[in-house]
Image (tube, rainbow, N blue to C red; front, side):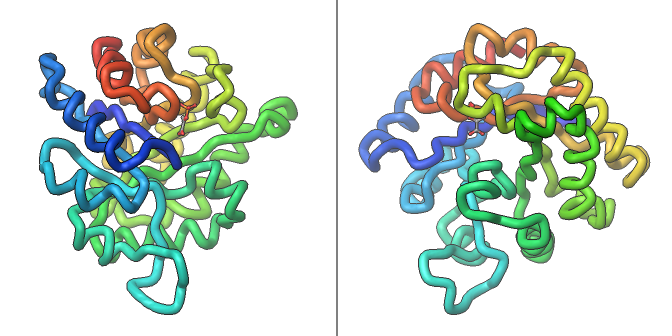
Amino acid sequence: MRNKILAANWKMNLTASEAHDWLVEFNEIDSDKSNIEFRLYAPNIFLSDLAKSQSMHIGAQNVHPSDSGAFTGEVSILQLVSVGTQSVLIGHSERRSYFHESDAFLKEKVDACVKHKLPFIFCCGESLEIREKDEHLSFISAQLSAAILHLNTSDLSLLTIAYEPIWAIGTGQTADTDQINEVHAFIRKVLRESFSEDGVNVSILYGGSVNASNAKSIFACPDVDGGLIGGASLNASNFLELASSF
Ligand code: PEP
């Protein structure tokens, strides 16, 4: 059974009081929140306060694979979990490109999550250049092979995948539903081939300029189990409004 997930990725946005107000507003909006798993991926400095409210799944946008050590500025899984963090993003394209995170490093993070049984969203997706060369499927296959496909089926309950074409992130240019259907069905096929029927139960989210006007057609795609939402998640009511598009 695949969970329907709406995940907010705030990136490096909002101040402490804005983060607090967002959660208050989200909780006060009177709508049925029971059928969808809402998640909030917030900057690390807000995780402790947000998690204390215990009103929503709170996740981190990044993690270091080591348990502790001389890694100035980094945060470990043990530290995240100690303040109530419930999951983490791994391999967001902004981490891959701006911070040069390699497939091998991302695999270390995946393995650390498995070791500590911390759920994670593994992000994958191609650049415009790769799509224009029609190499997007082999590129995504390589990203999955490098960091995910070695998992044991017993670890799959920790895994959610987000397909995020880089050219659609923060650009206002969404992938069309044919493009989304093609890639999500492809990822589902790869998961089935690697993990048999257990692989079919992994939720696959779409991310890339999802908003109130395109969410309905995206969430209607058969292999789309929800969204990873950047810009449209910075306002609590805009984010929650997307839930009515399922
Ligand atoms: C993201 O940050 O993962 C994302 C999809 O951003 P946006 O919705 O702004 O494109």
